[in-house]
Amino acid sequence: MATFFKCDGCGEAVDVPKKIGFIVRREYCERCAEIADRFVREEEELRKATQERFVDDRALLIVRFSAANFRLPDIP
Image: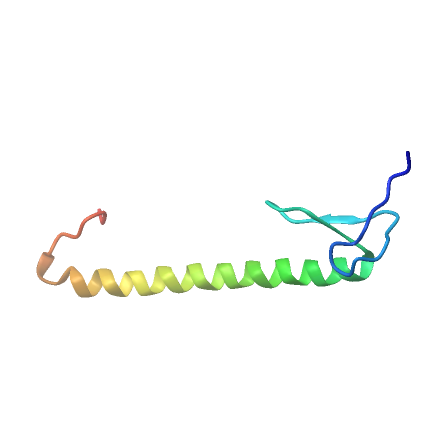
């Protein structure tokens, strides 16, 4: 029995697909793999920027709410 691969991006037949994804892995042709790789990179940049903003904004909250030595929950 023959094995047939179809690109999850464009739907075209592909001999050797590139698998991309961590939870839901997809198989792409070379052209679509570039798009999927770019998505993964930009998503990771967004995740990092969001986490950094959270850390900075949380620090400001801690300063504001811990005035006069008020002891906050979950803050050592």
